[in-house]
Length: 573
Image (tube, rainbow, N blue to C red; front, side, top):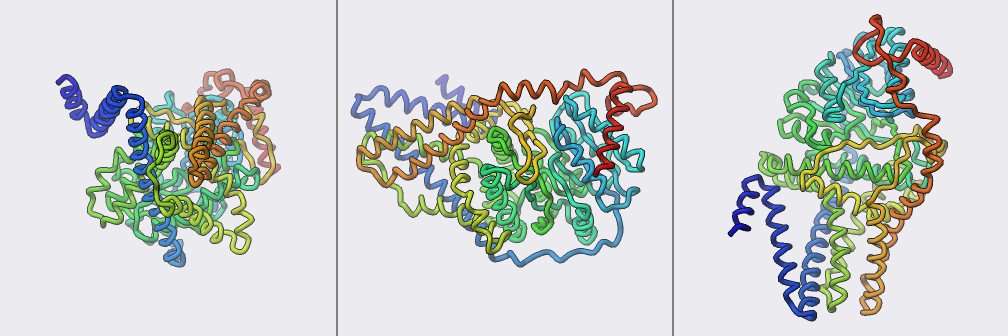
């Protein structure tokens, strides 16, 4: 009775808490029941349960693969359905927001790009939303004062506390903004001079347009095999998925940067909210559910930096996995019950639950060994497994063909590493999904940028290089688990399942092994960090009364030196 009362109490706390309670209690019951059985019956029951888990996970993965195939077909059907170029008939007031947190390596490049946008200065407001705790603030002070002296309306806005992380900074800036359109760029993005000329006209010709997203391109695609593999995945998303969703009338997401919002749309949709780590997806779905139109322009590109360090990629993926599932929990019911057609709602829910693929991959691996230990295991149609494998590969190929034409195979050659990454990162992303499901407090961990372009530059000794995480040990353990499953499968003559198990082993071994290798850079990294980055608290003193008080000002000698360095860099540019 006490268990039932506890379950009812959790159920009253909400659907998520109730669901977690029932799943947990059912699992405990099954575990106790299994322990009460004899060894042979216990092994047989465990194998049967594992078979059910494996089959369910595989079928759900196949359903996701079917949605990827559908998006690929929709892209091919609508790829020539481009929006007509709108004419620029006037120059509305634009506010450009630059959310920044500890970006020493890239802020100069960013500020230079934004101040060279082709737009009347009297109609352009630049907000540098700086939450930094290192030398970034000092660098920004010099640049802001330099460009302000040249006639730009540019402000450096800082907060006492980093409440709400990026969403909090954007909302604070919005309250002070004077523009009717709000453009947003992360620190590693470099928009071209004509970026506003290419995007703003669509807002003039369509009053219902609330958001416009451009395609990410890559500053450092050719830097390494890792960046080339990531570029394939990003191109698949931005060339195929986003285009297919928008041109087919499906809901799609703002990607957090390289886009423009109509201020009225943000305010009417509830503003920037920090209860998820994907504030971009959250706001864009709320806007579309409120009736606003959103537009995606695959032909307008905004170059950005791909994470060259695997630990940085894992951090980025963790944040996206947790934030996306948080959006599913927050908006799923609204999406499912809205007035849009059933297929729009279905594809939107699949979009919001996309990162559930990773726990499903993990479950299918973990269930394999118990199945094999008590043969014969429940078989799954090879066609289902094949569909899950080939659908994403087809989408990535279509994306590369669209971008590179006859030379697509050269760019597609990094696909094997992408496959290993997609598998090996499953534990990392499963952790993000579980934190979302269990309501773990949000901490927005930034993805470090290193200012890389092309195949030039070094990141290994950079002070922003991340430490190895505890998930790495779990990844290596899963690689060993997969190898043990290979041995058992070979011993029991289940050869057909060995290739997929070897992929699991290779994927987790690669991701875990790379984590160990990156950790070996730690001694050099620590010495370098003492030279390159000083805490901003040591550089900042009380602001003189003649300077603006909206941000801290360095001491007079430091400020003078910073401005002179900025002027010299600008002269060289």
